[in-house]
Amino acid sequence: MAETIRRVVTGHDNNGAAIIAMDGEAQNVCVRAANGLTSTLLWAEDSTPSDNTGDIDKADRKTGVAPPDGGSVFRIVQFVPDDHSVSNEEMKRELGLDPFDSMPVRHPGMHRTHSVDYGIVLSGEIDMLVDEDEVHLTAGDVVIQRGTNHAWANRGTEPCRIAFVLIDAKPL
Image (tube, rainbow, N blue to C red):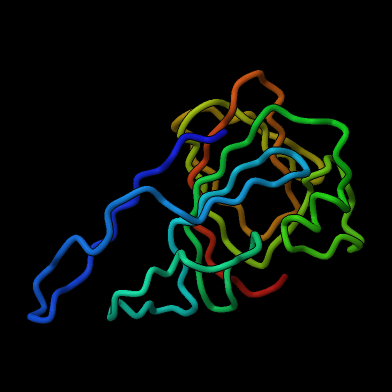
């Protein structure tokens, strides 16, 4: 089970003064049955530029892995060590992606989204696989993933936590 995440969201009162609008445990936690991955949605925007008015909790929604068209998502994902019995189709179904697209498969989690993804490894270590290459990442490393076919492989024995911001991008 992933650690809980405290989420603090600022806002404005009726006079326009800055306030702490929300402070508590992030509630939108999804555990993927196929591989034990835990994804905590912290915030989502439906468009850019964002609308900072109102007091709606924009993490109170269902999302797949990709951001909304024209929008963005901010989440923290915990990857448990790999389970090699998981199929690519099963993983893609759970991620809200087309399970029968024609992308080559190096790893069951191989997928592509129309987004630019900023990833910051918070703890642990993980390998990012792309079609013909891979890179080993550890805590403090940063990835800018630009709409490429990719997967995350935790070949270690401890969970790895990564903070991701995904921003919608033009399809390649």
